[in-house]
Length: 60
Figure 1 (cartoon, rainbow, N blue to C red):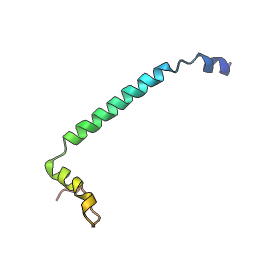
Figure 2: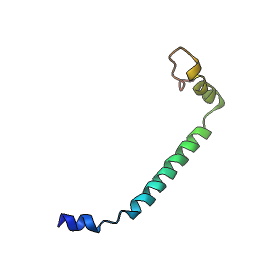
Figure 3: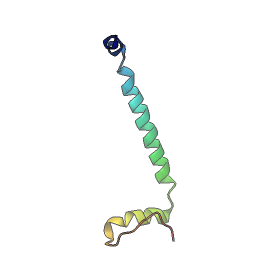
């Protein structure tokens, strides 16, 4: 009975669902990065250049 269920599953929809989920996640990340302030982006960009351990999200 379980083998009949496994054989009956159509996996072609999984690829389309994965593409939709990827596009949704990409869109959310794009919106999140475009909403960052100029100060935050400058602080994120300076992380690899500094020797000090910093948390760039703490705005002072």
